[in-house]
Amino acid sequence: MTTITTRSGKGSALSFAEVDGNFTNLNTDKIEGVTSSVDSEIALWSSTTGKVLKRASLTGIVKATSGVASAASAGTDYVAPGGALGTPSSGTLSSCTVDGTNSVGYRNVPQSGSDKTTSYTLATTDIGEFVGVGSGGSITIPNSTFAAGDIVSIFNNTTGNITITCSITTAYIAGTDTDKATMTLATRGVATILFISGTVCVVTGNVT
Image (tube, rainbow, N blue to C red; front, side, top):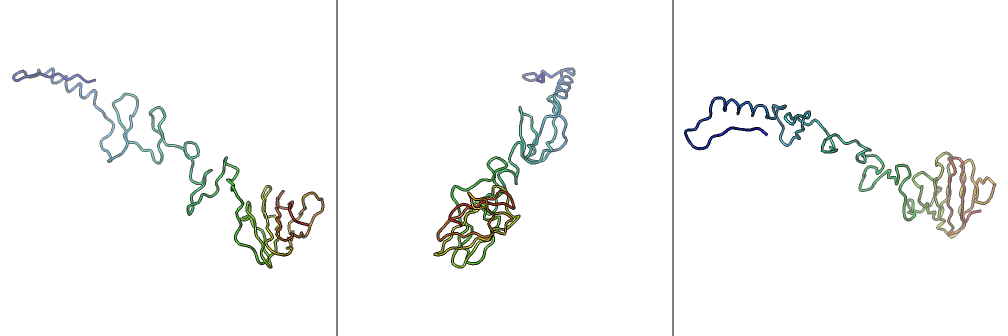
């Protein structure tokens, strides 16, 4: 702490040595390092002397470790846009994951669009959902479209049987070892397709 010599009352002026000492002391303990500033800009200590300031040049999110400021790193100090939680789009989150790899699923099984009343080829947008089939509709399972672990369910919402065409290389009915080119889904029946790979699937449910 700088010591400044003063006198109380009138007629008791400081000596030249005391005035000179005051200027020396003030000059020794003054804060240096900047000649201008920007309103609301952060000032940081420069070095460890406790006398020199510097203008902060950090941009973005700032973190503090034991009082020392530094720039925060996306993906380490906070979730980066487009990262595990995804980017909000029209009020929803896309590409969300529970652990950085596995997608967040549903607590129910939503319907993919409306009932299909013409021939419909399954698409990756149907994954995790059920496809309803109305009067005049049928289903085709495409080849080299889905990946291992993808699941799509089909509901026959008609009074008659519908045809599932298996364009995929290999399609089994669960519990059998016969490759099927077509399958029949019974009226009001449900079939669930589990893709083993892009070219192999297994179908369970009310199919023959």
